[in-house]
Length: 499
Ligand SMILES: Cc1cc2nc3c(=O)[nH]c(=O)nc-3n(C[C@H](O)[C@H](O)[C@H](O)COP(=O)(O)OP(=O)(O)OC[C@H]3O[C@@H](n4cnc5c(N)ncnc54)[C@H](O)[C@@H]3O)c2cc1C
Image 1 (tube, helix red, strand yellow):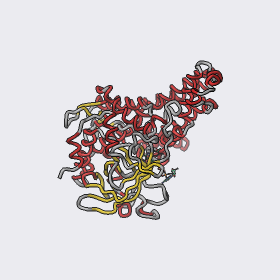
Image 2 (tube, rainbow, N blue to C red):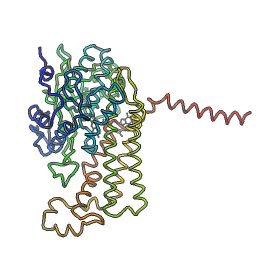
Image 3 (cartoon, rainbow, N blue to C red):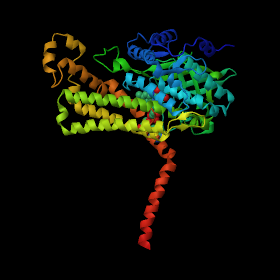
């Protein structure tokens, strides 16, 4: 029997262009619900069209610099996205970094889920397929086949990991309803049936959904029905994405410069007896393997590599923005303003140093893949959730009331245009230059879009508190090494005193 994946693989074109992205979203619309209604066409709906247009344009951008962003598929010879490459050398790893930088810069880091984030995850899973195959040879083969299917069709993924926020004091199994969190309802010869819900998926305006475990499963008996990893198309029967309210419902680029372009949307994912064929399953009922999968395959490292590239672009953007704001209103004469610009610059150089170290210290992993060094990436992913809110605070401190004293596009075109020209001028910018600049600052630091960015940076990679706990546990041996040095120093003093 020819599966849907097999059929699509035969039609694959390699790296896509924007028009193909839009065509697929229209032909196979994701199961999106918005304010109580099913959305048929996300490319024209005011809540989604801005983000969809940007998503599509990313695929055109990759063809503007194909020598950087694409490479030759090892299986088909077609040009495919470089973010699917399994690097074997330092040079290849750096070439992936350069490719990821193109999209990060294009979106100024303001679209966390540019597709290369999960392209790197799936590439990691495919590279670590032998780990998945230890449980069942089919799972390893599935991961490789699915990865090739994604790469050859250049499809875009969203993912969902955590159970709904009902009662965080107990596990998924102990919630009021055992099917609150997505759970295996049935197993058949052909596949599994999933019922329940997962808390969040950013970028539901994508082609496929990756449903993977978070690392919180504890009890082999109780948690087994919640332990699985699989991927399915976003138009699968029974799947529903219940979206939050749009932050920028159809607003212009002038009024909402960031939100109108980079609204990637977040959704709760409901599985109403969703059937998943075995060929799409990578992990199943295996608590230990589910908890270890991200780390052992290397997926988490490759994803974090992308995140740090994004962080650099985002920090560059904030530094440039702050500098223009300061200059416009002549605030550079104040010492604390200099200090704040310095803080942004230091943050940028810190992220760049993490990236450079991670790439320079990369080494071949057990799967023969050039894996970036984890320590600098782990430090970066734990630090940025603290740096980003602080940098947004700096934009607020620099902009002050200028961030809310901002007319709209309609005001500029209205009868008060002459007043606006006079009263909104700045020391080094005409009113009509200063207004879009400060609207950009508003969208970064004040608007609904801006505050969702802060929430995103705080949480998207996991709860910072539990991430810090994992960091201490994961780097215990290194920390212990320094503890032993201090212990020896303390002992020296004590021995001298007691001699
Ligand atoms: C904008 C945004 C986009 C996101 N996109 C995605 C996505 O695309 N896919 C996806 O899978 N996830 C996504 N997430 C979810 C993200 O993974 C979670 O926010 C993160 O793992 C924290 O979980 P939670 O939000 O359920 O918080 P909770 O776990 O409910 O935590 C709430 C509070 O309780 C505390 N708390 C809860 N449990 C514990 C504990 N055991 N120990 C200590 N403190 C605890 C937390 O520290 C926190 O202060 C996104 C989140 C945001 C905000």
